[in-house]
Length: 75
Image (cartoon, rainbow, N blue to C red; front, side, top):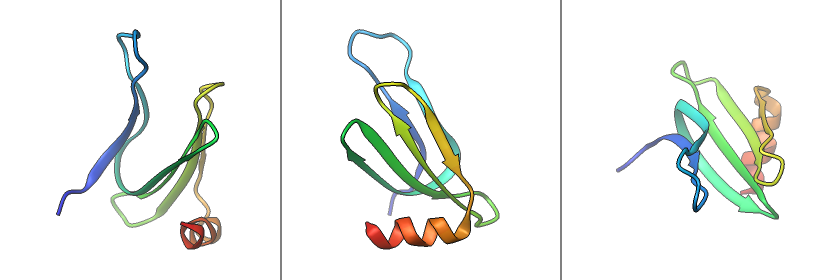
């Protein structure tokens, strides 16, 4: 079993990748309409959810357990 520990965006022609999330146990990643959605947990098991916009390069991290459950249920 492999675990993901980071989420990275690599754009063709650009030398430096964008690290969206690093140092977490990434449990789920999905993409939809130029957005990357991710679910993860920190080293203490606290849930982390977020969305990264590929167009604006904005990364919005949510650390709300209730929201985590709602997003996880949608996957």
